[in-house]
Length: 257
Image (cartoon, rainbow, N blue to C red):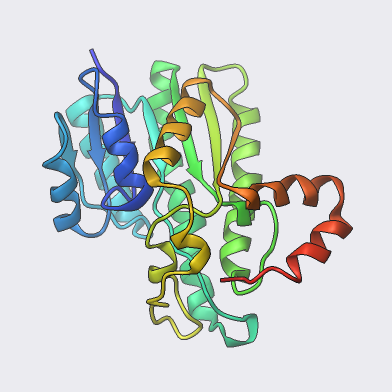
């Protein structure tokens, strides 16, 4: 019998690619996101989908969705918190409301769903919890202040959670993609909350979502604590860790787009 795999942000990009990657071995793929039409399109490509529209910033919807999953399947084997929103604006241009929205979607949305699903995993004493961070979760970068902050926060929360679960068979993985060829830069918020509506050059030349999904799937199977995916920008994670002064020298010279 296959696994029950719940993916948020499943209507496009990395979420869609992960749904396709896991569409084997009779796996049931729960597809969640705000746009049902996108979820239905992805579902049409899968063998055993279950469409469950969900806005992760709505706590009542989370509770109802988890109850629905519990009633229908009784378990979640893999939870992939992929819903996310990026930013393209200077700090002084970004309204507080936009900053709060980025934190609500990227941080609170992820941890609230995780907390709601956790009892199901504890009941069966097995599972994988996956949080989608970013290379920007390991270092700050221009035009992404709140985005980077929200992704940094994920690392603190999920590291603490993984240590609390050390005596269980529940594994926590944080994924840090760099430049992946998705529409994340187009959907990113400007300072006033409007969509950026531009494909960043770095994003356009990023690795494919298929390659990204394949690496994420392998890392989850191996119960890796962190997964770094991308091109040369991933080197900045290691440079920041070991030679922070060199990181600042390089980051000041890199085009943030």
